[in-house]
Length: 75
Image 1 (cartoon, helix red, strand yellow):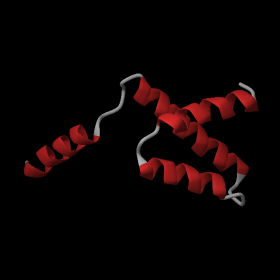
Image 2: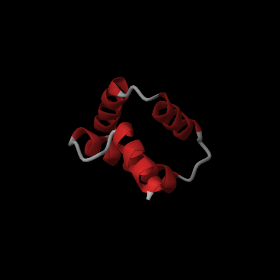
Image 3: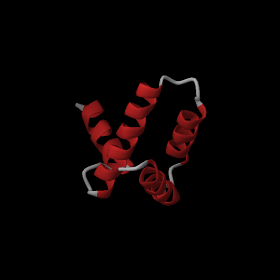
C-alpha cells in the first residue's frame, strides 16, 4: 500500500469516526513528531487494524462492555 493509499484510507476512517476520544488519541499520535518512527508505525497499524475489526463486526459496543463488566463485578 502506498503512502497516498494510506492517507486516503485514514482520511475515510477519520471522516466516519464519531468518538472524540479516539480522534483526540489519533491527533496526539500524529502531533508527536519526536516519536520513534518504528513505534509510530506500529501504533498506527494497530489503530487501522482495530478499525477494520470494528467494521467487520468483531468488536463490542460500549454498552456490551459495560454490561459484561457489571456482570463480572457482581460475581
